[in-house]
Length: 592
Image (cartoon, rainbow, N blue to C red; front, top):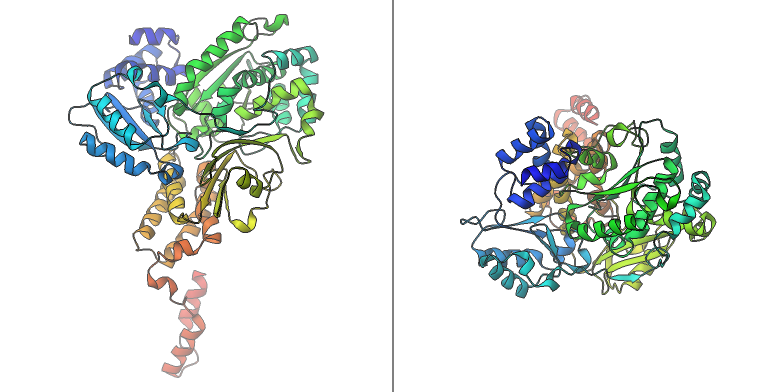
């Protein structure tokens, strides 16, 4: 069996992630013997293979049971009662969270956000997603596990993932036939197509907003033996799920955008890096790719234009940091997902050290629309500085969670009205690494010139304790830190410990000062964006929702700060000397 897996992947070390996943699915876990055999099969040192296997949350090098149940632990799942449901499951199975049952049958634990925030609480069972968990489902699931029923025999409706498209615009409402945009791009030629992308003012939809035309042109001009196109479908930011819907409803549009990018930069190979939580999409996406090959839209001599290009799908394995483009490339090469030092950038030294374009799912879909309709048409949507539309993943305290597509420039207040949100006290935009705003900012607009976002839009009404929300976010960052650099590895853990200390009623104003100090260290010394933004939810909410913290602090929080002038005056009165306390003044100034 393992030999077949190795042969199917050509014993290529850059396909190690897929080899490990398929081996684990077939054998249940990655035993020492399995890791040794894989290392021998691909010709890599065993330590390197084991290093990759141990880095990712969804690979396990010890038995975790025939059934591995992971409860999504994003804040929106908590708001829907995930912890109570998980505890009920553990009680019925007679096990503790994080432990494997004595008979080796099952383990139950939590995982980071699964991208099902609009239909939680959600679980992964052997890495297959099941949304909308209830006590009734928990009880029946326990019975099925005890009876050792295979997942194929579980109720089919449990595995149905709703798209929940609440507002569609030019992307989600697209009705083009497969090949229409690609045909227009090939007829226009690479030069003209690149000009249209630049005219459109399309900017990356992953959050940074870099100009797509500039990125593609830089990659096109870079020297290399090969060029590559990578679609970043690893939307691991808590609260984000719009790429999941695009890949379900508009996969041809996404693949078409990748193919157009390949034509412009001269690439012959493309990859979709699909997050591990979306394992359920793999077969359907492979079917779409097969249909495109059969229609002459992928493979050799596409549409008879002498252009060769094909796409492979690589599945991630539960590592938020792989959403960063250089960490994603490392993972795609079969390594630990540790972000690279930059420069050089992927456009010149990316996959296999060759020029590589990495863009978000939504960006490629927009590029396909531009190919078919033109840059001027696309620029007619949105604002002068933010062209086109933006898809928002709306979740939390609202009547209609789901996916909303708006032209750039829509106000936060409008989104809240459309999704049926009432008594909102805060909105977290762009996930924990983004920005938290209060009611006095609801007239601000979703646009690069005001509030840029990768897509997450989490709503919290007046019933919610903002401190608990932020504590969940900080635990997420501490868990997802790759551990490469000390500032992030230690800093995120210290932030988590400070939040736990405050939650337990032992926090003081000095802990608040320490939070600000850690934020400065993380921003200036962390290796990548995860560390740079890890304290964002704390800093934003301390500024706007400080009472949520202060009511938990010990009484010394409200003691007056040290008054140097008063201390000097007291020393002079006690000694009758004008120089009394001079050392105190000097030491204090030095400390400052």
